[in-house]
Image (cartoon, rainbow, N blue to C red):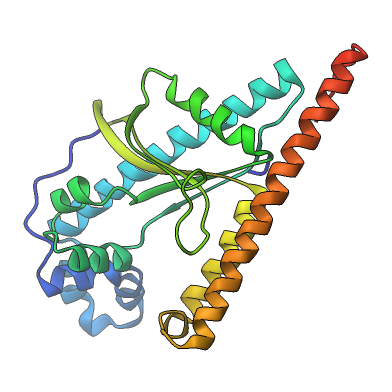
Length: 264
């Protein structure tokens, strides 16, 4: 395999100054070194309570990512020891950028406040788990959700019910307790589970779509043909996924007949 403290009560984040501070924090801090004349003004901006509260909120999401990631690492190691099989190929994680948060709040019509983020944006923290085989996806899901401190809030199975584009993945929205500053808080994390084959298709489709958004949103016949070809690729990759699962099952059965432990 590759590899809470309470939020300070702060004013709204919807005023332009505050969001500009959050979005450009790194730039502002660099400016403090380079432009002495603006130093006192910029320091006041950096130290505004809204920015501190935002940092605390992001620290909670980072802690939740670490909690979930550690759980998956432990599950994978346990499977290797007990079964000689590593169900997880890779684990990656990401935290939504302030720019992305601000855009999504506006697009969805949610208030641009800390509570607006907490109550309405469920993918601030994201963990993606790439599994070796299709069966591993659901095994890992069941093992995660069997843990008492993990609460399932939402489940969308795009493997059984693929998106129109051909996208396949299992999406879970869960919460885990995070302990910061002597206080426990439930923090939400979006978990995506998929196979190596699904990840291959999704990664390339994502790059094509977001680098060429204006093209793929077009309704021209030529672009409809391209979207159709992407769906066909997804179908073929899904069939390969199932074939690989059957091959793995058949090999395991043969090894069992011979009384041999198969490590894979």
